[in-house]
Length: 228
Ligand SMILES: Cc1cc2nc3c(=O)[nH]c(=O)nc-3n(C[C@H](O)[C@H](O)[C@H](O)COP(=O)(O)O)c2cc1C
Image 1 (cartoon, rainbow, N blue to C red):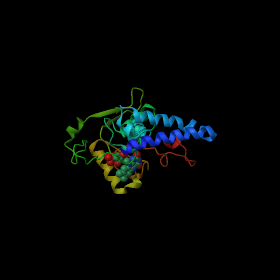
Image 2: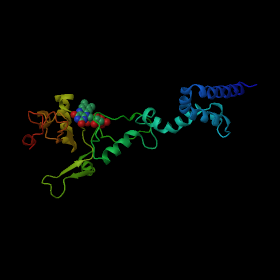
Image 3: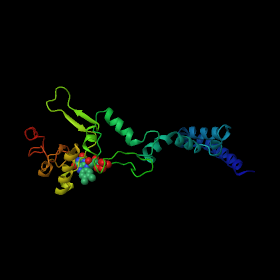
Image 4: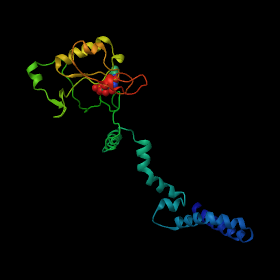
């Protein structure tokens, strides 16, 4: 006789015994109310012929199907990294959600993508600018519509935000000289405008977020006068 068959005979015997005792001792009846459905499921599993896992592992075999059902959620919330998901990874999905809700979508200090990965594509400035007639042809974007008093023709490539405090006097000076020569703009970073940003007269993008520097009053609030 196989161990499985012994198990079935034993479980029938135990069930019959419990049923018998329940006539004498009422707590057993109550326990049957709670465990009865499980017992029924167990016998159903053991005798059905469609799913071998349930037949071999009555009741607990259901967990396999429950877990399989939860697999996509477990993968998405616990296993998958922000950059792995296919066809659209989590960082791009989150960006779409944030923009759709008009929530803040900016992430300071770089990217989570592996920019050294083979096949990663990007655009870069030329280290040595070509002659100025070619620069005039470079693509630009006009910022400010018909009601704007001072529209600005912006280069599509500029120097991204880096505060004076995180760089140095010479770095800010040389970058500003570079933007003057190259006809693009330098973002001041959250540290705001320092005297070194103004020395060479290169175009500036004034970063007023995160609001710690630049144009706030003593209480830390936006100060429209210093902004003007
Ligand atoms: C030294 C340093 C300072 C930065 N300071 C600021 C800052 O003040 N404000 C800001 O929004 N981003 C700041 N950034 C982030 C950059 O503007 C930029 O978003 C980031 O370096 C990613 O661009 P990249 O891949 O071209 O380097 C700083 C980055 C560096 C390396």
